[in-house]
Image 1 (cartoon, rainbow, N blue to C red):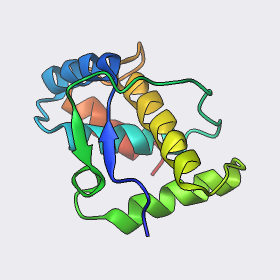
Image 2 (image 1 turned 180 degrees about the horizontal axis):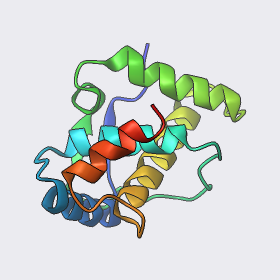
Image 3 (image 1 turned 45 degrees about the vertical axis):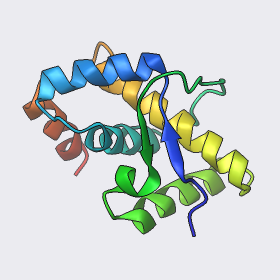
Length: 128
């Protein structure tokens, strides 16, 4: 029952993901985007409100983003949206998803972000 069909990234996010590809050896955009989304969703704060341009050449379908686990990622988005009081309308959810995705991408390449694949995996184990 997902309402997001296509995911388009900003040029800034594309540059950040290229950095992460180099650092981790992970070749696929969608895999890195899944890590980024999960990293942002686990953060207790709501992502800051901003307009994010879709000005890069990176575009993927929701199904490509989720790797076939559509329901899992949709449920993660819905739970956070409800917790944060986001309207459960198509446009509002799509915007909220983009905020999480782009914040997560920024976290991945920030000063405290992983410098290699082992550190990226360490993020998943950190709170396990």
